[in-house]
Amino acid sequence: MDKRFKFPKKKIPIYLVKRKKIKDSRGFFERLYCKKEFYTLLKNKDIKQINRAYTRTKSTIRGMHYQVGGNSEDKIVTCVKGKVFDVVVDIRKNSKNFLKWYGKILDSKLNNSNFVPYGFAHGYQSLTDECEMIYFHTDFYYKNTSKIINCFDPKLSIKWPLKTSLIISKKDKDMKFIDNRFKGI
Image (cartoon, rainbow, N blue to C red):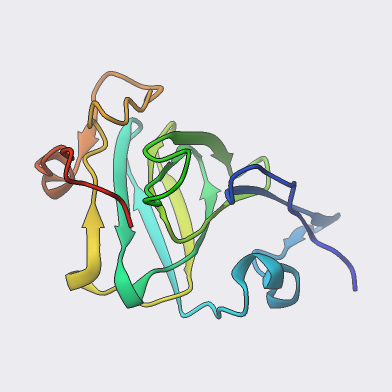
């Protein structure tokens, strides 16, 4: 089989996935997902939903989102237009990395994606205008099990690259900071 993806080994189960483009005089062809190649990461889970997000303005933040219980999900997140600072927060209750965050640049020109497993909250900040993201989810969206952590929570201390003109949804911005009762998932 022609391998189109590289999954570098990590200490934590977050993977920056590099995709291989096939180019010719017409342009290029690029595979965003292959069940055979993602098999070891997804552990027999199927992709159940594919979503697209468009962000008009540079400096916009979306997140930090996750689902709990029987609706936990893994995600493969890809920037198909523009550039974003993609962030995950470890919210696994017994992890030595509990509440630590990890950020990577996803850029439509770099052919990369981020694999975000269950146990991590996810969000991003647009670094360019006119960003488009594609999400592959291993479960459906359920409003009643969908959760948010405030992206400005001082317990996380995420260092967002752009400080001016921050745009964020009301529900994300109004989310209370986590307290000492938050033990993770």
